[in-house]
Image 1 (cartoon, rainbow, N blue to C red):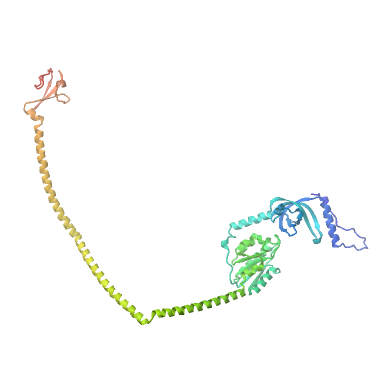
Image 2 (image 1 turned 90 degrees about the horizontal axis):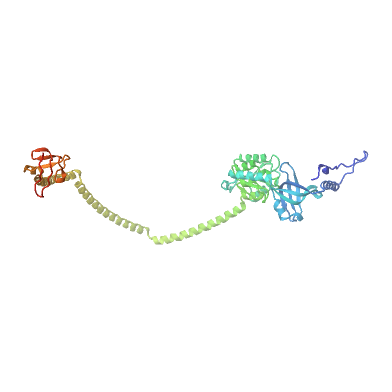
Length: 475
């Protein structure tokens, strides 16, 4: 960029002589002087960086927008001529984008406006203002202020419509004109500043004033179109929260159809223009009158058709019914027959139940505890006698078997053998001497006879032939 010396210039005309009046400059001369000074100060192209706002693509092919400084309150109008507008430049220069532009500032005399003519653009990122707006939108959406389930239906027959807008703007006139054309409605204006310093507090105060009016049924918040700066108050958090917390439904009519603010998301309905907002909340009296007329006509025709069908049905039923007395008599006869059948069925049922009760009483008497105990006692006595007989017979059989076993055991007893004069020799360990190998000379033995035990010592062992008595006498 040029240094500070190249930017300095002096528009002070030469001081005329004291006795002469200074010659006034024409507007064209002043414009040419300013343009010449600007062109001379910026002989070479410079780069400038900022955030794009209010980008407009016009039919001529040129691109117009405003480049804002994000740190200071400063802005400059920018134009990109059709020869420099490429698809990439068109895509870069959108609202909220941060760009770096190359070009020269110039003074446009037809409008007396300083502007920057750019011929090249580079992307830098998203602008701080757009970033802040997106963060605020995400924050409020996370709190549920934009949730569809919070949206309320607009009243069909509002008595009083509150309008928050500038009293000198076109919004209130458009709303009143549409309301008068559609049949009239009470319009209550809450004057508010809709742009500039203090607009946020003014809009919130106007909403609060309308909510204190008990007969207000719906509120329209609106203003005409404008730049992003002009609509900035409707993107402020305080205004969005005030609209979301309003006790009655709110219609947002801010800007034109292409303008979108955070108030549009928080309101219960959005209108493209203030006139459309008035059409949304003010019922069309002529259309409703025509609807009522057609509805009344349809109802009249339907009732006449229904009455005619009723007359036909009544005549048909009257012919089918005939004399009511005969019909009543026939029904009475049917009733008498059914009463007689019912009495007969009742008697038969009572008899069956009485027989069932008698059988149940007989079974109950058979199962009475005294009868059951008597039968069981007789059975116990019979079983006791039977058990006694079986026990005696079993005892006799077992006693006879025992006597026989005792006689056989006694016959086989060693004592019987000893009584006949035999003896039994045993070693010290108690084993009986039955073979020549069981003892040897010098062994001590015991000889058992019928009535004594004899201790002896073997002096000699002499084998004998089989079948003979053993030899070798005791010591």
